[in-house]
Image (cartoon, rainbow, N blue to C red; front, side, top):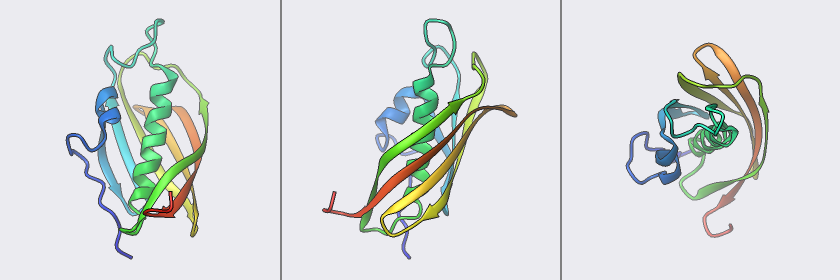
Length: 136
């Protein structure tokens, strides 16, 4: 199986990730690790990281993990994600580790954990559609 490459530091590859300050450290073999340094950009009016930013880390991490398992003629799209928020974040460095739990012919199931240092702040599960280029 020839897998797709997910560029870790490719300007313009993922503009939304760049907008929120998300960088990828690793993306291979059905696993991804993303990181985000908390500054003022992802904070809500209560000076806590907005839940949507944490969700975006999980969603993007899932896309990166499944992307690393796709054939060159395949694409993926999010079907659904369920996320549990466990702790507020006001500072630090968030990391999101994601792994493919199951990859079928048309569906992939993934898990993400978002941590602030060693503290688990969110956990997510997701389902992705897998399809051939042009099927969309």
